[in-house]
Length: 546
Image (cartoon, rainbow, N blue to C red; front, top):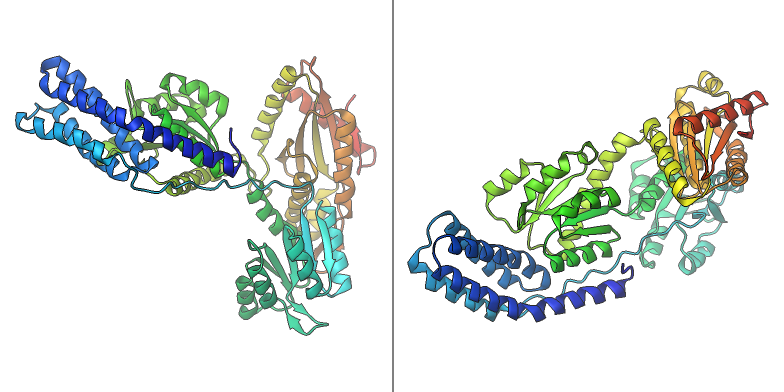
């Protein structure tokens, strides 16, 4: 699959050239079919008119995407005429006019639009550590922020002068900037300077301002500097981390998974390349009988379904998909040149969720699919993920254990599951209140996401208890990973009303190899038993199940 701008542009160009090369032959065949259909009668005429309608429909839907907009529009008008003849007798007086119009399509076989190639959006890859530049001239404040951010796995560089920071930023831009709004030593405010700096960069950097000021003018100045957050001193570092993680979560999101079902292989491939250029993962089905297999293998978040496919209608395929509970939540969007509003409404009433009209430009296609896929993911997250932490819910993390156990049997790799629990958490809630407890839970969730591997799955199992699923990991590596989390978590300083406190955690780990006969429930129980040993062995430790 092409992944670079050059690859995708070359593929799109080749598709367009191939389409243009085949077009004269297709238009000649259309003209011959029109002549045959309009001179036939009875059942043979119906068959030929049906074929003519299908080919005109295909041309109307594809021509615009390859730069032949006028050809597509004219083909659509002819398609509508054939559709009327399929419902009632052919008007003899219109036969010759229609055939002349089909023959005239050849005059439109020149592209009237420049290629709308879209550049590939390189997926932003998360480095092992997020690089943050801190611009703060108070040494004590800076030290506290740096230490806490580093515990969460971020790499932090501190600058106490704006000029020094600017030179480094222009040479090596960070992932984030955290900036004090006033540099006391210099007697200057930073938002205007940061706004000027942003203009020198190829793309604006996300910046969070911290300040003793809490007035509208300060907030407005921060917005003009492209701020994504503003925090009033004394700074609650956990809230700062939460804001950074929210932003990082959007960048870390996996590509949208889109399944295209369309019998027009050339047009479907064009759509695949265009959506791939925007960083999406796209699978194609050009033979409807393969749709169920594709669903199981690809697990899409959204389905683009052609409304008119020979032998199978789009609504029929949509209903086939909806027969399984597994695919009830996946939105189905019809993609068609159908202009009849009644037909659209009818299709939407038969298992469809939305409608996108052909022809559609590359940019519009990316926007339309991105918006719908994002909504689909938001709905899935609302159902599958814990609202406080953003981690998988109890049932979903158990499902993930099942999935990874099955994968372990196939791959021969080991699998470890960890049960993680906060120590003396009831005391935290009783002493500092439940909002403080929520802050501690969110902090641990952030730390687990930052410190564990990208291949690991993490869920909130209940209350202050978490589960981490670690595929391809043995007991020794699992202990190392979780001990790193444990040591960094105990160093994080929480505060409520100027009262500072720390929290520790304990964890139990259970592992399975290729020869295992364990179920998810058994493996989780083994991890829970190991957690029990850690708790009763003094807490603040990791225990491995025997």
